[in-house]
Length: 265
Image: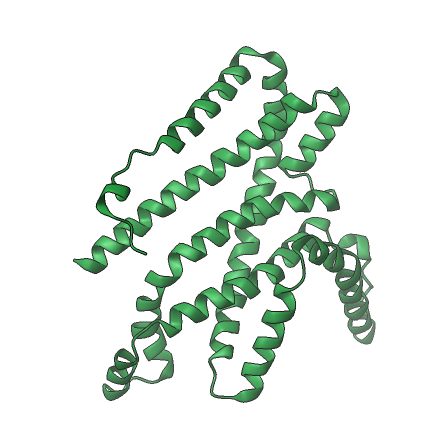
C-alpha cells in the first residue's frame, strides 16, 4: 500500500516527542552530576559497540551476498547448502548463537588450529587468546548473514529478466552482468531492509555484554551495580542507543528518498 502525499508530508510529531525526551535527559546530564558521571563512564563503551557492529555487519554482508548468489546458482548442491545454512541459522536466537560460538565453536577452532600448528612445529595457542569480542563479532556475523542473504536474494530476483537478457545479448559474461547490470539495480531494493538490519544489529550488539565485552550495556550493568542508581544509569544507556538508532534511521530514510528520486528522474 503506497502512502498518500498527505501522509508523506505529515509532521513527524513522534520525532518531536523523542527530541523532547532526549533533550530532557541531556539536560539532566548537564545539570545532574550523577548523570554526567554515568555518561562519562558509558561513553568508553561506545567505541566497542560501534566497532563490533561495523565489523560484524560488514562480514555479514559479505557472507550474505555469497549465500544469496549460491542460493540462486544453477548447481543444486550450492543451492541446497545455502538453504540449509540460511534456514538453520535463522532458527537460532542470537543470544543462543553468541553463547554457542563463544563456548563451543571458539574452543573447537582453537583445537583445530593447534592440531595444524603442531604439524608444522609451532607453539599452540590457548583458548583464552581468542578474545571474547571477536567471538561476539563472529556470532553476530553468522546470525545476521542468514537474514541479509534473504535481503540480497530478494533484491537480485527483483531485477527484470529482460535486463539480464539484454546484458547477455551484449556479450557480457556472468561476472560483468552481475557487477554492471544486476547489482546496481538490485541495490535500490536492497538498501531499505539492509539499513533496518544494520539498526537491528546496533541494538543486538548489546547482547555481547553477556560475554563480558565492555560495550555500553556491560558498562551500564557494572555502573548500576556499583552505584545502585539503576534508574539514572539505564536512562543514560537507553539515551545513547536511541541517539544512535534514531539518527541512523533518519539518515537512511533520507538516503532512500534520494535514491528513489534519482531513480524516478
